[in-house]
View 1 (cartoon, rainbow, N blue to C red):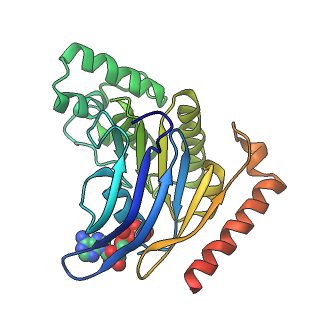
View 2: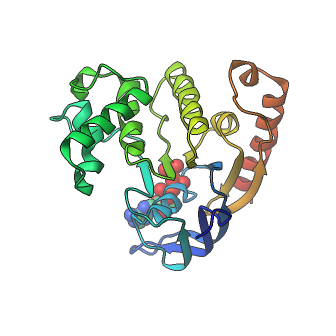
Amino acid sequence: MSGSDPAILLEGVAKRYANGTLAVSGVDLAIGQGDFVALLGPSGCGKSTLLRIIAGLIPASSGKVTVSGGAGPEALGFVFQEPTLMPWASALKNVRLPLDLLGVARSEADARAAEALASVGLAGFETAYPRALSGGMKMRVSIARGLVTRPRLLLMDEPFAALDEITRQRLNDDLLALWQARTFTVVFVTHSVFESVYLSRRIIVMAPRPGRVAADRAVDAAYPRGEVFRTSVEYAGHARNISAALHAAMAA
Ligand SMILES: Nc1ncnc2c1ncn2[C@@H]1O[C@H](COP(=O)(O)OP(=O)(O)OP(=O)(O)O)[C@@H](O)[C@H]1O
């Protein structure tokens, strides 16, 4: 694929689970390289299902899914809502896991894992075990693990939903800094209108039963976005528009 091809192309994607639930239907979506896109919608509208289909974790029942660079660990990283760390392994070993699975030599893997930990602000915590880390720090380890293969695509499934507001805002800022410093595409699932507006350049609003795209909105505010943006009239205006789109989607 050339650089001008989308990072992700979904054409007529549907997913019916074995129990008969039609989780998503008729999804057509092209996501550009390097974009930051939020999937926003109420519980059960198929956000996680769509993300898992993009990741290749589950197959679509119909339609076509094209991910630039494929779905291997060097192409995409996945960050779950729970940090899902191995409790018996140090932060460094947890972050190193995708490299170990790829067969990267130990010394190189250690160096890259340490660099990934440093990139999320955890230099010095290489030997710490998950039980010694706060919720926010565990999520940082999880993000480092998602980025350690330097993927072109980072898929995040409500990664900060379980964190307190202050930690969440800090991680939002750090994620944006990482995204700006490198060139990867982010697809970020969230329930939060405010989080989606703060982070994204584009917001896909989804409606439930069956899950589908209800609205597709740009957030044309400049980066870096910090406290000034978070408290601006511009931010409040975007949040109002997205909130209205979300309510319309839920009522439809
Ligand atoms: N493995 C599964 N088997 C059967 N049905 C499922 C499965 N996973 C999800 N579903 C159903 O598919 C629909 C979409 O679920 P999904 O988790 O994708 O939504 P979501 O928007 O991510 O929800 P939430 O925000 O609550 O995580 C729901 O009705 C859910 O119950």
